[in-house]
Image: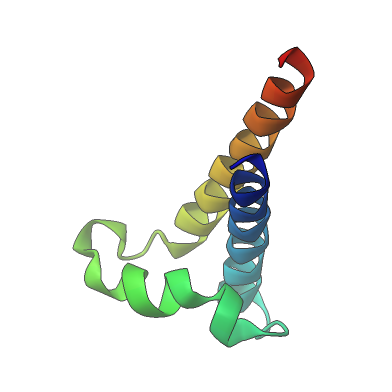
Length: 77
């Protein structure tokens, strides 16, 4: 279960960074995989219209927190 959470956290970090780069500059490598948040979720959330970059950065932060929490849990267990 820890590995699954680590992979999910890493994916969220990469997806958030990739989505930010997509909005700011260029389409990153593997955009279909890493920009799923941008392509499928953000267009349907009216509350986040105009806040795509902060939403993507928040996604990265959530992933980083998940990675830290899983890493800290491994050390105590």
